[in-house]
Length: 358
Length: 166
Length: 100
Image (tube, rainbow over all chains, first blue to last red; front, top):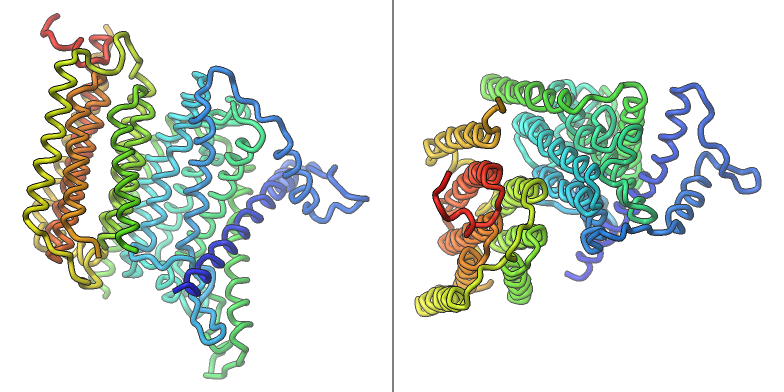
């Protein structure tokens, strides 16, 4: 009992640390990626003795030091408890969502089978919807606690956008659940074994588009970022936050990018599946097996998952710097009149296909 | 162990409910109600009703309470006269009434000697069990509920939109 | 396992606190929130009994209560918005008279 608890705690700590590191790194990747798109050099001033280490100095030293040592400016007329609560309420559901995303198969260590997924829940992928629902409160409170009319409007708009796109996300997830026949994410990944043509995106392309679009809209990234539009509303609902609180809001943005990438990779791109890699080693055509030790197999699977997540994060960053921003009514129209009917039609077609073709 | 978890959740629930009812600021009341709903979802998980717990958070805490917060933040301006009703008689009567209700219900429950539930089947609160019941036995209420939701959406839009200004 | 009676007593206490809220608060939105608290207490009792009997009917009922509460919250808040827009007052005792 104690050992099991310790193992779960260790998994949780590993996942949270990896996610936070990747989120920090994504900040630098975003700046360099935008520089690539806009044909300029980007951030290149932070370096230690001339060594900039591919952005590691910027991310691991400069940015944290900057955010942690900045003065925490709290406006005088603000409700201090809500002002403190809002960034925490924003970051917590985003981080906790990773409890259901599997980053590998099982790890056999010292006679134990450790599933590489922090929590094996009954409700599986519905947990992601639960945490997406809770994530709305950080935005609403951030706007309200700023005691600033435009932050409030930005916060209310942002939360209205989030709950609208939750529906599209739910419909996309329903089609995926119908297709795989299970709510459990680990089972979904196991069903995608054997080469890229067995992955989810071949069978559920519409659900992939739905999930990707609504995921980007949920995290309020461009092209859906009018609530926080950095060129128009300063920072929208988190204008009045500085220092560590701003870091928490900012980090939530990147953590949600990683969530969307992780979810899409798991459901549609095979998760931790490496093409033709089975539990014993590479299974090539003709029945030959290139045997590999178990730890190498597990490492390859985790590496494959990481590569897919990073690739999808890069894709989202490229979208940000390519596509112009939606106006708010266009955004809501897309969510309600565009994605919801498409999602419903997809659910119906998937259900007919599953029942008809077996 | 299970009793300790239940005790902790129950204590937090009662504190949260009292904050909902007694705090003068309506935003704090709404946030306390969100906390109460999340704690109730935790209680549902201890009762093995996992899907209901997920729905509790998605529907209640994630949608309905956000709607409440919207209305409070946009329109619920605090007026004059304070948040609580005036009149000692009203307070005394309400307090006595609520206490009588709680005590009455509590003694009724305590006297009926409800047993401890047994270990139970593993598929008590899973998605498949509930879905099977919803789509076979209770299909008609399910479809009627969807019509009800449609009516509610149309009604809410009509009511909140108001008359176009001439 | 925790006896079912404990859950039901907790539900009764929550229900009583909700009833107290309806009686002593003036702000109609907070009154509505107290009503939601009562609905949640009833949900808790339903799930506790369903767990004791091992039946799915209790859970299905909870689902319907949740859905109806959602519909009621939407329409109720729309009514409140319409009343506030016309009367400029959010307090129950100031909206007590039927007048123009």
